[in-house]
Image (cartoon, rainbow, N blue to C red; front, side):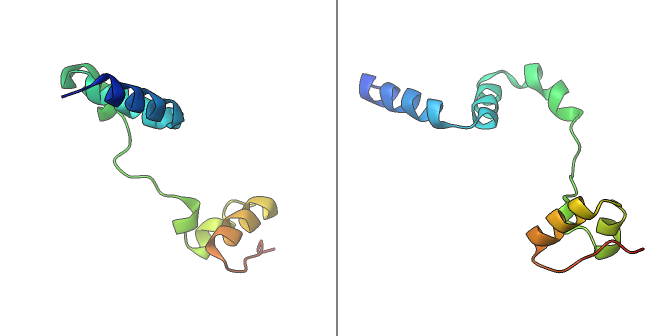
Length: 81
């Protein structure tokens, strides 16, 4: 049972959510048939650069991007010349 106090807490929490948290919450309040077509076009999996092999990272061909990815992975990489 919602009370005025609970509603106030929910609204305060809502404002602190990042945009994607608010969007996800709104989607969950909609009937499934309204949002399902949008979700069906999203990729089933996403590969992040931090998960790539050293060879895949080097294919970026940008020393700046390679260093950013390697810093996240906490390892040394360099652009093969």
